[in-house]
Structures are given as structure tokens and as C-alpha cells.
Length: 506
Image 1: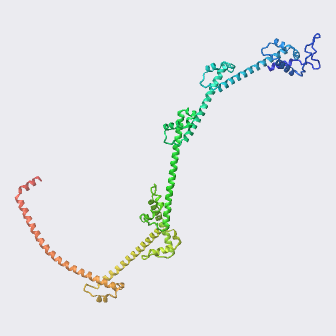
Image 2 (image 1 turned 90 degrees about the vertical axis):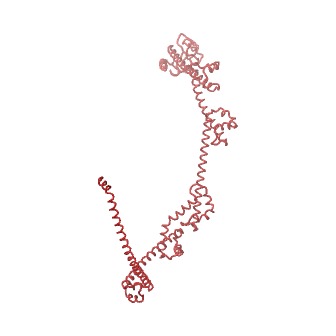
Image 3 (image 1 turned 180 degrees about the vertical axis):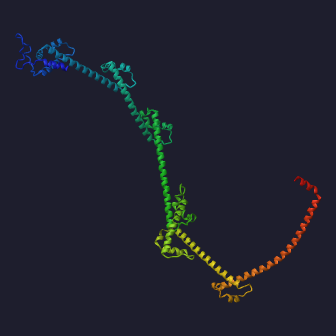
């Protein structure tokens, strides 16, 4: 259409501006339009726009014929401006084409608006749901313009769209309503303090029927039972978690209290240790009368875990484990003070030397006493070794002195004064410095000599008696042997056949 308009503009001759507009060729033709004002057009574009406005102004329909149009516009002063008939018809056809297009667009927009209005009407209508059938709507609204303004095909399309949108909206509303009901029911259950983690679903239903917030809410009453059961299960699950958390908090609190009780009892044992009442050598039965009267001991009774006796043993064992380190400190103190421990050293003397040193402030009294006993045992061992060595040396001297007496042929009849004069210059005599020891050894030697002599005489008498007894026994044995020989010989002579049978068997 634009190309046709351009061709028309090119072919139209614009009138001369210097020539009067009412000067029409012909035989003195006198125009009826002389009384009307003729517009002044500058170019072809303005001419075509003016002609189109003329057609619009006269409201020429798109289905009008050229002859009908001429009757309407021929009296307008703009009509003769276009000189040629074919140019006028071209402009008319272009106008019709544009008019038809505009009418189609207008009709389309009108139909679109009618569809939109019908859709809005149906969407806002509370009687229409996603389950409503089309024929029900047609029976109910066919007399309304909003229904008739839409064609059957478009109404079907609108119905399908409305059903889809209503289904979607109902689904969304259902979700919102479901969420609201579940939230509201959860609030009602939270407000019911009588419900705990052991309450059953049957019991909760009876409680809800007696709850005003639930009964007065029609949406809650219409709530699906499955959703209500889900809310109840979630609520019970939350209550169980709270119950478990409460139990866990109580367990932690109880454990903290038990730990605190044990720590307090440990501090009590430390106090006893600082007071000197508890040492590494202490026994439970000795300190029980003191410990049992303290509230820190009573707090431990009945609680699980380590008992007061266990803690006491642990504490004593800990003190004992420090013994070797503390013994080293004690040795250093004794070495610095040049204090030597012997079998006659008392604990008071030992403790006085140790306690005067600042390093003894951390020492355990029991470990100090154990160290003292250990040092005393070592001192006693050294003393026993010294005495054994002294006894060996003394026995050696006594043996040498006895040998000297034996060499001098001293017997139990000898006199000490006579013997002393004979041996006083010998080394074995001089090695024994005490006269009393020499006399003691001499007397013991005499006793031993006398015993040996007596034993020798008694042995000689016993040997004579034994000889006589042996002769008698020998004669008896000879007699018995001879009689046995005679008996065997007689038996052999009496039974020769028995012997021959035996030989034959062999």
C-alpha cells in the first residue's frame, strides 16, 4: 500500500500557487465552491494527507464504492485539487486498504478485550470453579452481553484458560490454606501445656474438641485429618527432642556436680595432707573417723564413679609415686649438712636436719619417714656386715689360739697359769688382747678335750661288746646253715621221680 501511495504522489500535479484556486477550465464555468475557503497545499505529501483526512472526515467505510464516495466528497473544495480521476481512485483505494486494516485491528482489539473481560468475569465469579462444566456456564450466562460478545471458539479458549488458571489458583489457595491450618493447629498444640511426649493421637483429638480456639475456627475444623496427624507427629517429635535435651542437660548438670564433689573431696584430702594428718603411709581406717565427719565426704555418698575410698587410694598412691624424687632431695639435704645416719640415729634427729632446709617444704611426711627407715635399714645392714667380719676375724684368732694349745699338748688336766707361761710369747696368744677371752677359749678347749677323751673310752667298751656278739651270731648262723643243708638233701632223696619229670619237661 505504501508503494501505491508513493506512485500516486508522484503522478499528482500540485496546483500553481500564483494561480487562483477557483479558476477552473471550461466555458465560463462558475464553481459552487467559490464561497468556501480553499486550503493552500505546498507539496504532494500535504495533498495526499489532506485527501485522506477528507475521507476520514466524511467517515467513508471500507466497503463503500467509488461512486458512493464521490457523491459524498465531490462538493468539498479539496476534491478538485486532485486533477486526475485515476489519481483520486488510487488515493481512495489506498484509503480503503488502510481503513480495512484499521477496522481489522479494531475488531481484533475489541474481540481481545471481550475475551479478557469474559475471563476476568469468570475468574472473579465465586460460583465458577475448576470443576464447572462449559455447558453449565453457557446455560447460566448466555443472556449476558459479556458472554455473547465472544465467539463460540473464543469462549471455548477462554473456558480452557480459566479452568487452567482456576485449578492453579485453587491449588495455590489449597497450599496456603493447608499451611495456615497446620501452623494454626501447631500453635493450638503449643498452647496446650497438658500435652507431653507421651500423649496419644486419640487423647489429643478429645482435647481439641474441648479447646475453644480449635472449635471456633471453621477452617481448622475442615482441616484434613492426614495434615492434622502430621502436625501432631511433628509436635510430639519436638516434645521428645525437648525431653531428650532436658535429660541431657540434667545428665551434664549431674556429671558436673559429681565432678565438683570429687574435686572438693580432693581439696579436702590436700588440706589433710598440709595439716600433716594424711601422708603416703596413711591408712583409710586410721583417717576414716576424721574424713567421715566432713560434708565433702557426705556429698560423695551414693554417686556413681570413684568413691571416697578410691580417691583416697589415688591420692596416697600419688604421694608414694613421689617417694624417689623426694628421697633424692633428702639425700641432698643430708649431704649438704654432712649428716651421717647410723643404727643409733633417731627419727627426731633425722627429721630435725631435714625440716630445717627450705627444700623440705614440699616433702611428704610419710615419704620422709619411709626414707628414714630405708636409711636405717642400710645402716643396720652395714652394721651386720661389720659384725660378721668381726666374728670371722675373732673365730680365726680363736682357731689359731686353739691350735697353739693343741701343739702344747694341753689336756683337760692342765692348769691355766702353767700353760700361760709357756705360750705368752707366741703370736696367737698376743693376737687376743683380752685376758678374759684367752681364759674363756682355754676353758672351752679343756671341755672339748675332756669330751673327746670320754667319748674315746666309751667307744672302746662298745667295740669289745660288739666282738662277743659277733662270735655268737656267727656260730648260730653256721648251725642254721648246716641244718638247712641236711633238710634239702633229705628232700631230694625222698622225691627222685619229681626231679626226673622236671628234667624231661626241660
